[in-house]
Image (cartoon, rainbow, N blue to C red; front, side):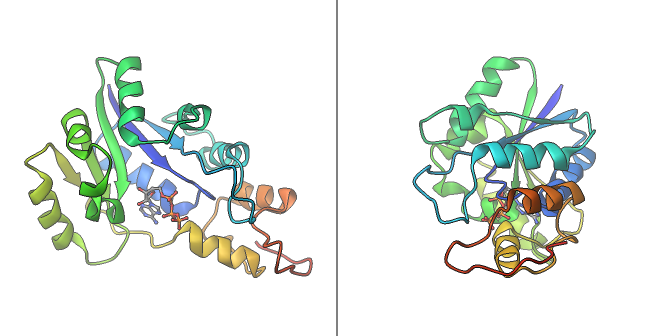
Length: 209
Ligand code: ATP
């Protein structure tokens, strides 16, 4: 079985994340993908960072009824720093016969050699990269070739969907409409739980989507 491991803060999960996962399923013929939300320091209270429970719930809503998408609480349940190599080792122990893919956006590839134990990561998984910016394919291929001495790296061909959680959090704080970047149930959840409203910049009642 070909299994994708997809880590991130998912704060909140947006259409770019889902685009990455759907593209990886199709282009690399994966059988399933585990979304693995990371821990965010519980000391950050500033409204920009929401709890693991909220991020898990938004992932559950955004994944909908896609049976190939699953959500893992592994990193949220472990108090130590969420290094990817630990998560990969966990999935390796759980699914010893699977071919493991680590899914990342292209920004992560560009700084990949700064990741903790990156050589070991590349020994254990195929790194599957999906572009975040139009026209960056040549740069990505060049980078993949350099890192190729450590393991297998594959780059998707599908056009990117340019969006980030940072941009979305800023928009919500300003009460701007985000419905083109988010699943409609996620929009509803953010509204009903009143997430991402800056405590120091109250906004009048309004509509995010
Ligand atoms: P933030 O703006 O808060 O840093 P983000 O939008 O980059 O968040 P993360 O949850 O940090 O999202 O990203 C998790 C993974 O998803 C990373 O590998 C990242 O490169 C990838 N990713 C995020 N957005 C996109 C996108 N629009 N297209 C492809 N990959 C993406």
